[in-house]
Amino acid sequence: GKTMFFSGGRVAAVRNKQYNYTDNDYEITFDEHTRVQESLQAIQARILPLRINPLKSLGDLVNIQNKGSCDIVAAVLSIGEITSAMSKRTNKTFMKAVHVIGDESGTSAELTVWGEDAENSIRTLQPGSIIAISKVSVSDFGGRTLSVSRGSEMTTDQSRIPTQFHQRVHALQGWYQSGGPNAVKAVADMVDRP
Image (cartoon, rainbow, N blue to C red; front, side, top):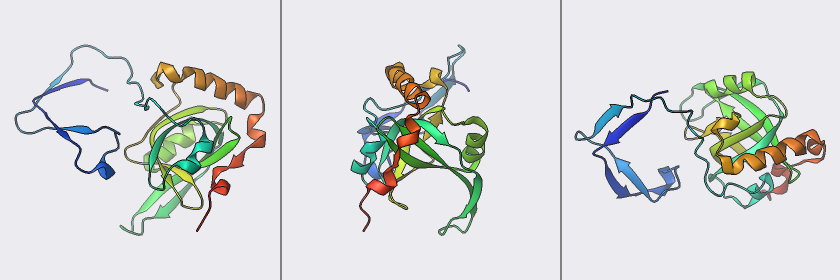
């Protein structure tokens, strides 16, 4: 990727937080006076923008509202297959893969990945991989599930995970290797359904 410098933007308070996935109170607007310039220096791989306070565990998903979002660091327990789904709104067909992730809270959750990301996830993920996802969508579809959406970013590359989460990554690796996944309960079963 390339690194770009931006100047001439206007800072304003976020008008509608429903459409702001950054969890910030302000946004920058660019117009015809904005200057964009490419950096001539190489920059290291971008660090995944995890929030300072991600979930303590997947068990905490029961406390997140439907259609909310959060950041997750968890172990991949199983890899799904590519299937297709039809959008009711657009009548377009999308590829998807549903994986299962878990953590040391003894909780697992389904993680749906869409489109090209679904294909990439099938190739790159494996059981035992530690995955970090920023801005994963939380849904009540079939219980409590997670979905990688347009604003989400996902990685298993530890160099892209902020250093303050490396201890959690190591703890999850130890949990996985010691047989922790053998005693997990699905978060979907922990949510009261109407």
